[in-house]
Image 1 (cartoon, rainbow, N blue to C red):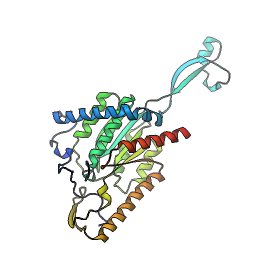
Image 2: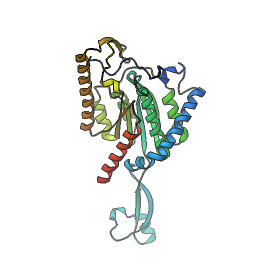
Image 3: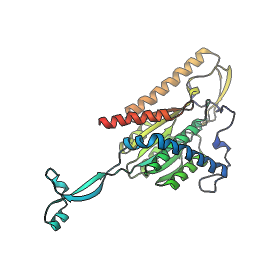
Image 4: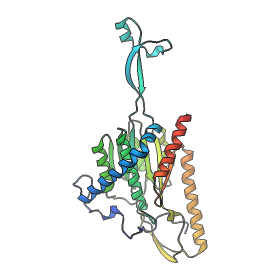
Length: 325
C-alpha cells in the first residue's frame, strides 16, 4: 500500500487514547487548568530538571553561540590593541589612550516549533509521536531556563495554533509546558510552511529553532531555506517504527488521521508489504537528503526508544564541529 502515509489509526500499547484527546473540550491555555494537568506539568518539570542538570547543561551552552557583542569595560591601551577599539571620549578625558573591551553576548533565544497535526496521534510501541514531541520540547524548555536564556513556542497543524513569544524564567517556562500539554488542536492537517513563515515574521532577533515534527509535508524546502538563512534551525524528526513496515494482519482498514480517508489493504500479501516499505524508505531518504542539502542539523527520534541518546549524539557531533570551526 505504497500511497498511504504513516497515518493508520493510532493504538497505544495499553489501548488508551492520547492524553490530548482525553482533555476537557473547553481546556485551553487562557483559562484555569485542571489539577491533573498541573500534576503532569510538575512531573515533567521534575523529570526534565534532572535530565538537564545531569546531561545537557554543558553541551547545550557549548554548541550554541550568542549573537553580537556585549560591552565589558574600558581599559588602558596596550601595544597590539586595535586602533578602532579606542574610546576617544575617555582618551580625551584621561589624556592617554583607552580602549573598549567587549565580550561575546551569551544569552540565547530558543524557539520550539511543535507539530500537533493528526499524524502525531500515532504510536505502536511506547507512546504516541505527539507525546514524544511534547516531552522533547519540555526538556529543551528547561535547558533554556537552566542557562537563563529566552524561550518561546509555536504550536501548529495546518495553521498556526498557538504562539508564545520568547521570555525568561521558570514561570514563563511553566506556562509553555502548560500550553503544550493543554492546547487542543483545531486543525488535523500539516502545513509546516505556514508555521515557519509566521515565525520568520515574528522573530526580529537571531534564534535557535527546534522544529519538532515528522516532516510529513512535501512543500517545505523554500520556507526551511528562508528560515535557516536568518536563524539556526534544527529538525527533530519524530518517527514510529510501524510507519515504515506494514504488519502481516490480513485484510485491514486504515485511516489517515489528517484527511480522514479510509482504505482497505491486504497486508498478508508480501508484494503489498514490500511496495509499502520501499516507498516509505524512499520518503525517509528524501527527508534526510533535503536537510543535508539545506545544511540543517537533524535529530531522528522514535517512539520505541528514549530521545536522550539521539539528542546527546547531536550535541557531541555539533560540539566537535564548533571546535573545528
